[in-house]
Length: 213
Ligand code: 5GP
Image 1 (cartoon, helix red, strand yellow):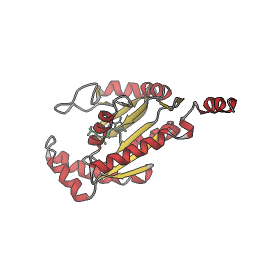
Image 2 (spheres, helix red, strand yellow):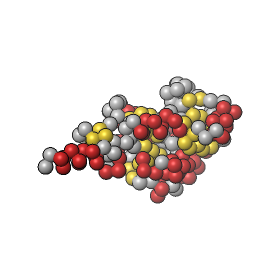
Image 3 (cartoon, rainbow, N blue to C red):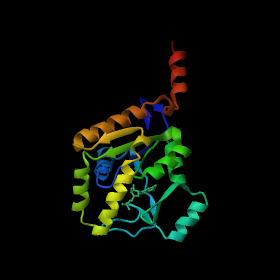
Image 4 (cartoon, rainbow, N blue to C red):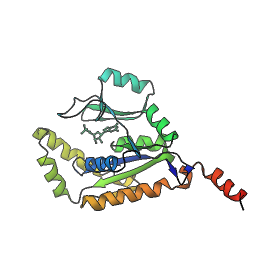
């Protein structure tokens, strides 16, 4: 929350990648590595839970009517439709976390990243994760057997679409070796936490230094 005792605003870290590029592993590592440092933003979705998914942990599973009501009420910071399902981020929890100096991690797609860039640009850090090759990604999508073949085919098309948005991100990591990739991610976070604009307590801190000189 603070860098050497200086108050700072939290950052909003968006991690996007095509499905199968290892983003979920990175997210888990990041949350496990330093559980106090990141809040995971739990998205709303209208899709049905997959086996093993827990309501409130992986997603908040809601009816379409409820989602639409929340969206039309301005309660969502961003939202998108993916494969006919709605996904979105609740505004209130993110705004208050960032204000209190908590970093928030988002596992959302490029559509969401674009909307966050419009609504909270100073707080946003966008990281895109690329696979080492198209072949490696295709192999990953085939070995994930939780989905039907037609779903896999759809995911391949979606992956190509998702990848085309890499230039809209601040940082790009190539996930060839997970350790190297994770180190890169940690370096980005360490640097971004030190950004002057985020360290809202700096003026007071520097005034104190000056008063002692
Ligand atoms: P899945 O159904 O496989 O969990 O997610 C499908 C896609 O929706 C992924 O690309 C994921 O990043 C994206 N997604 C998940 N939650 C959100 C959200 O809150 N907002 C947006 N814009 N995309 C999301």
